[in-house]
Image (cartoon, rainbow, N blue to C red; front, top):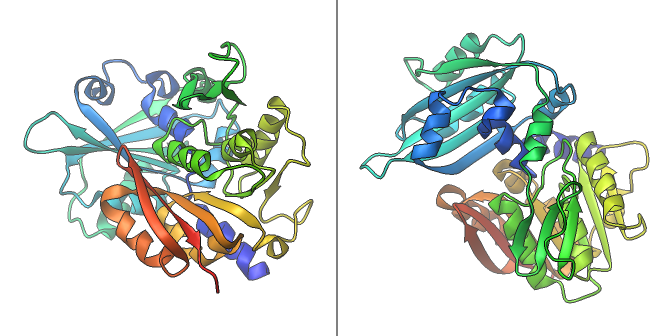
Length: 364
């Protein structure tokens, strides 16, 4: 049990259960306090931009608890041929807290990649970038620009950019205050993401919500592996599930999810959210395995691969299992190969370059 918890904790540090708040941190000029004539901001207005990758460490969220803390932002723009995937992982290893990587296209023959990395105040950004470039085999340091984020409440700026989202016909995700419900007759999920992730804006979350809408017929038990803001568990209950359970390694996520349960009038007897690992108020994780009709994990590629057997183990035989946070172009085949050992009837849905794989748990 202890070995499992340690493995879960270390692996899920790379998860993104949503993603959206860091998207806003990295892309909204108000959140970064970047002037509008910053090259990165200008590019986003005139060129097609597609989110390719977003990584964060738990320490990024910990730092965000002090909303006035300054930070450094390093921006790279270069040809697609650069080993960007390896470089982004190396930057994380050498000190970056958050990485955003986008494909930029001006409809010419060659696309470019824009990579933005966030470093805490006091970090030697130059040394980090130099070491990262060297570790991936580059004999030069890519050109980059560094800006200093002023002391500001970027969390508030990000939350102010959160608007009602109609995921599918009749299903709305709505900010908890200040904006009236678009259609009181529709299914409305009230949400205050706080420092957690999962506003429903990112394609991975939308794909998971669409999966739930199709899979839930009424009375199901749902397990959310990396709950974030709790949006999937809340949605499952509002769609007709009988009970939801969510786990997360981030204290901020657990706090946010529990607050969102209250906002939506959901009692703890209908949905429980647990911090994992935790010695206080934590369920016996092993005893929960094999008891759920639907299991979803919206996390990163590495933990999806490493924890495949554990993720699937929470489902009953023939349970619906969905995994998301997968890049269409590079990762679907790898995920299929791993999950085909555990699932039947596998198929993949895609949205804006992201994929969600689903299947039914094999009978042993």
